Image 1: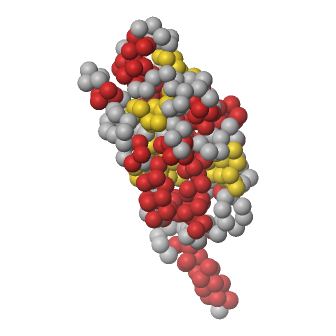
Image 2: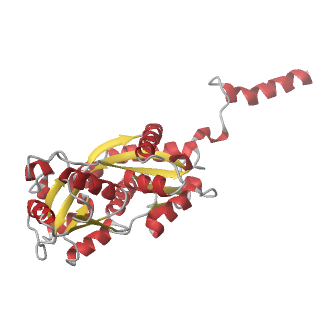
Length: 327
C-alpha cells in the first residue's frame, strides 16, 4: 500500500512536467518585470536614437504594457562602444537591461572592436530610417546641393557634418557617385547627430547629414532646410522640397542607406525576458502612438521583426558587412 501511494505521489508531481511531451522549466510561466528596467542609449539626448527610445517607452507605459517607464542611461563614451560593451557583459540584471541598437551602431562596432551580435540578445527590429542633407538658411554658402557640387569640382572644399556608422558609410557612397575625393567634399564625424546639427547651426560646416527625427524641430523653426534626400524617392511633409540626387542632376544615381532601428539585450538575457520584450514591442509597433505619432512625424517606415526574426536578420547583416570590409 505504501509503495502504491509513493508511486502515485511521484506520478502526480512528474506528470505536469511532461504534459506537453517535454519537460518544462520553472520559467515556463513567463517573465514580467518586477523592478526598474535600465535602457541604454549610446547617443546624446535629443538625437534620433533618444527620440526613438522615448517613443517606445511612452507608448508602452501609456498603454500599460510596461507598468513603469524604463530609466534611460546615456552612455556615449567611445562613440557608444563603452555602453554597448557594458550591456554585452551585463550578467546580474540581464533581464532588466535594454539597449537601443541600429545598423549604424553595428558597423563601427564590428569594424573597430571584437563585439559581435552573439554578445547580445536581439529582441526586435522596429523601423527603417533614411537621411537627408540640411543647411542653415541664414549662414549657408550654398542654397542648393547643385551649387555645392559645382564648388567642390571647381576647387572649393565643401564640408558635411554627420554622425558615425551609417552616416559615414553613406557619405562614402555619395562622394563616390559624385566622382569626388574626400578633400573636395570632406566629412566631419561627430559622436551624435545632435553635435553635427550644433555645428551646422553655428555655421561651422556647409551641410548637416541627419535623419528626420533629429532635425525635425529645427526644420519646423526654419533653422534647418532640407536640400538633398538621400533616398530613392522624396520624403513627405515639410521635407518634400528636398530633391533626390538624380533630380539634382540626371547623370547621377540616387544613393541611400536605409538604417534599421532595433532593440537588444545582454547575451545573458533569458529567452522568457526576450520574448516578453519582443511581444511588448510588437504591441508598440501596432499602436496609434507609434504609427501616427513616431513613424508619421519622423518619416520612418514600419519594419517590425520579433526576437527570432531580428536575430537572424542582424546576424546576416553583420556577416555581410564583415565580408564587405574584409574582416
